[in-house]
Length: 360
Ligand code: F6P
Image (cartoon, rainbow, N blue to C red; front, side, top):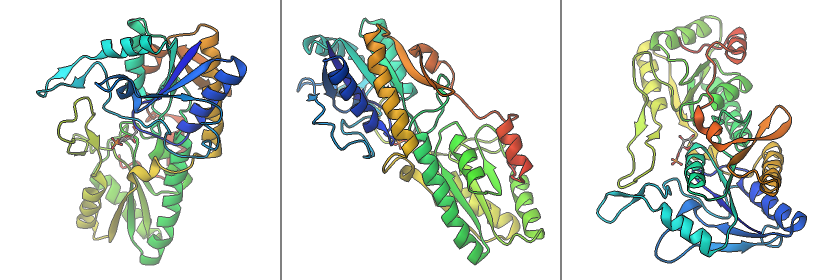
């Protein structure tokens, strides 16, 4: 038996923990061979042949605490929609299938988010053996309670808010901090609650500028001489649009990049109420660095479970965390609906009950 493993989409802390667990479990429990596929699905297309390397226990020694992915990744590598020679989009999935046959790979462990799981499901339909491992700092995959990477990102965001608190207090400023998450407000709401934010703006609850300003004025009147506003990159005003950075030229298959709302909002708040504001955009700091202990453990559990899943013949399925148990679900179920913050749910109500405004 020969198993391929690849990491697709944006990186996050904990990918190496999964790779390590896949290699160790496959080789030592089952005596299988493991091939690492480089740069996501890109490693299986192109003129130079497959970019793969054998992975053994010796190759993965010491990678558990390392951020990023030793295999590299790509968030444009969709073999069903690759950039063609004169700018058109080309389906090169046939090449992927040929390469995997040439390499005699029986199953591929795809470690990725919704985009990679969609590709894995399509390849599965064409006869490729696939199992999925869910990753993303956004925590927006519905089939699993938590994705690995999220906890590490949350730690970075919370620490940033703690640091902003001290300087906000010294200067009596309103500090705005923009966090990632795409269309899901998980990082913003949980880091905001953990960091004692005054206002949290998330995509699931469109805000009104006058409500945000009102919350800051009420806090100032109550004696709070500084404020912390956590803004999810996908937040938007009622009736307004999300803020995007320009998409890189020629990026077939890449999704438009959110980001930039925090700077304009800081100016709008300053103009509306005269508060001194500063904006901090955390960006990719949230994806970098060593995984938290939680993500190392979850990544290890997911990696081992993915190999056991192959051994049980569970192709087409993705490992997931439900409560405290590792389970598996059809890959298609995992990509059906994104998991978003419930605007009326307990988490939002709890945040409101400790005085946090959502600006609505
Ligand atoms: O999905 C993970 C994520 O970090 C999002 O939170 C963010 O919007 C996006 O990826 C950034 O993508 P890129 O690394 O391509 O800029």
